[in-house]
Every structure is written in structure tokens, then in C-alpha cells.
Length: 474
Image (cartoon, rainbow, N blue to C red; front, top):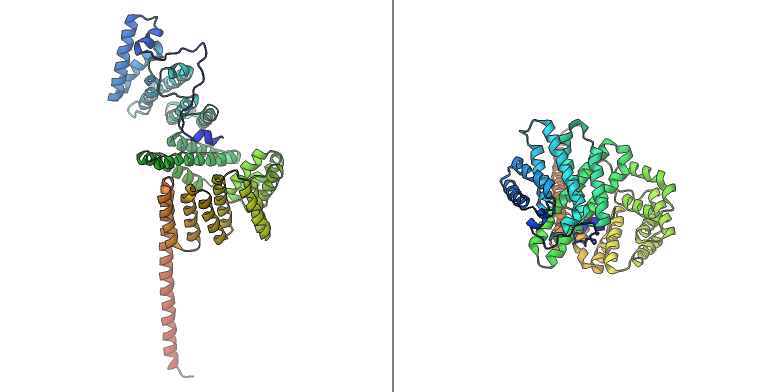
């Protein structure tokens, strides 16, 4: 999955409309209604009435009446306005999810009409874009369709609902966003997608584990890339926009991380087993090798022999900072400290700019922290800031983790605060880590108090025994 394309919100240039597609640029409601009705004045008048009533009923949340107007517009004036397609799915969702509607046949009818509406929007997308200020891509449409399908299909289809269809819809949407672009992948989309991926994994753990791990990495990275936009907004002085982006993506990121942590999918032995079996088929493919290296590194498998084998194979084909770090870790495990430093230096040399070197330093920090080389880890975290000051927040967060591991809780909490101040996108993660550190600090204080009480008890008991022993005859 090309997450960079998936994640970054941008205005996407729409390709030229083919000769067969209708161009409605600069047209009015009447023009677009008339186009489908041979400019019949009565039909145009009826169409205007249906548009007005549809908008009113949507605002009033009178979903049943709104549907009547939408059906006329869909049949007789499909190019009239985008609101048919943007507000229509919400209307159908409300009708399907209505607890007072007990007729299952009606729910199924509403569901089928909603899917037909999405199909019609896909078919007419270029024409709809021709008069719209906001240009949507096929990826945008399929993303919304995937979410509405997931929300409504279980209700409407009942026992005929197939979770795999929901998953297929999400993956199709992501594929289309990667290929055709998209305005923005929302936090709710990423959260719902990963929720479906999690359900699929739990239903088929043996066959879906590898894909589930990849879904986790992609969803997490997409959220993080969207949060980067908050940093840009803050730097430009738009704090309100920055806060809105954090509110939209920090929650889904936390959900994804929590869901994955509770899934048990990151079982070290299982992951090592998967990539051990695949090594012979992957060892000639640099992309698969690098993907496996990244995935193992992020799932606590970067001290396994198979991880080193992947790193060696990748480095032999095309040296990269990823494989160089892997070889540095192997050298460290083998006690070859000079080779370790050489490979870490090589990793930095393989980077094309200081921004990337800063990221590499953070990766080296991770590796050294894992092997409990805390002084070196802190040194590379500081180097990351020197290479790229924009990484200060992430570096401080890693320093917080380092200090927490060595029991310097007050300093760890201080670094959490510095991380949040330096990088607004990390405010949620910093607060969560701070809470965990403060809990550990409280537990340590309680343990210290209990140990002191126990030591005092032993001291008193020993003194008492000595007192009574003094009066005992030998």
C-alpha cells in the first residue's frame, strides 16, 4: 500500500473528461435538470421543487419524505446536484438503522437503493465534478461507500452479511486512492478499516496474520502522516486547524494501536515463523525483503536470526539504511562493536538529506534502546534533533521512554511534556506515555514504601529477639 498517497490530503487534479462525458461547468440547476428532460419546463419546475423539498426534509431529519424526493431526482435528474449523492447515504443509513422499522424487507430495499446510489455516483463522477467546487476522485467515493456498507450491511443483510465483503470494499477504496489519489483519508475511515481488518484476522488468524500486520503498519502510518499536517498548520500559525487535525486523527491512532496490542497478532514466535518460511521466496525481491525487515523491526523481532538474514539479503541486493541498521544490530549482538558503528555510519551515509538522517537516528535510537544501550540511544536521539529540528518531539518521546526504563521517572515525565510542546501531533501519545510513567512511578513508590516497612519490621523483630536472647540462660 502506498501510504504516502493514501495519507496526504491534497487537491487532486481530475483527468480530462472524455468526449462522451457531459461537461456542466458554469451551469445552473435548471440547466442540469433540463439536460435529462429535453428542457421540458414542467419537468424543470418539478425538479426544482424536488431539490428544495429534499434539502428541507434532510435538514428536518424527515428521512422518509426526503427519500421520495431523492428517488425522483435519481431517476429524472441525476446531474442536478452533488447533494443527492453526499446526503443520500446518510438518509439511507438513518432509515436502515431506525429501531422502529421492523420490516426487514424494507431495510433490505433501502440498502439496495443506497448501493445503487453509490454506483450511479461512480458512473456520473466526471460530470458531477465538472460543476463542483470540490473535485472528488473515485477513491473518495469508494471510501465513503466502504464505510456505509460496513455500517448498514449487517443490519440489512442479516445472516447473509459477509465480513469479507466489507474488507474487500475497504481494500478496493485504498487501492483506488493509491492509484487515483484522494482529497483526504478520514480518521474514521482508517479506524473502521482497521476494525474490519481486526475482525477478519480473528476469524482467520492463520491465513490473515501477515496481511493484518501490514494493515496495522499502513493504518498507523497513514494516521501519523495526517497528523504531520497539524504540525504544518501550527507552524503556519493556524492553531485552530492544527487542533482539529489532532482531534480527528489522534483518537483513531490510539484505537488502532490499542486494538493491535490486544489482538495478539504481534506474537514474536509466530512472526518469526512466517518470515522464516517465506525467506527462500522473498530473498530475491528487494521490496519484499525491506517490507519484512520493517515489519519485524516494529514487532520486537529485530534480534532474531531470520531478521539478520533478511537484512543481509537486502543489503547484498541494494544497500539501504534499513538493511544497514539490521547488520549493525547483528554486529552488536556478535560483540563486534567496531562493525556496529561502521554500519550505523553507513546507514547515515545512505541517506540523501538531513531530514532522512534524522529519521535514521531515531531508528538507531530504537535499536540501541532495545539492546539496553541507553547512553548510545540518547546520543542518537540528540543527533536526530541536530539533523532535523522538526523531529525534536519524537526524539524527546524516545528520551522519555529511555529514562522511564532506567527508573528516572521525573525526567521521563519532563521529556513527555517537552515532546508535546515541541510537536502538537504527539500531544496525545505524550499524555498516554506520561500516564503510564506516572503509574509506574506510583507503583515504585508503593513498592519502596512496602520494602521499607518490611525492612523496619525485620529490624524490630531482630532487636526484639536480641533483647530476649540477652536474658536467656546458656
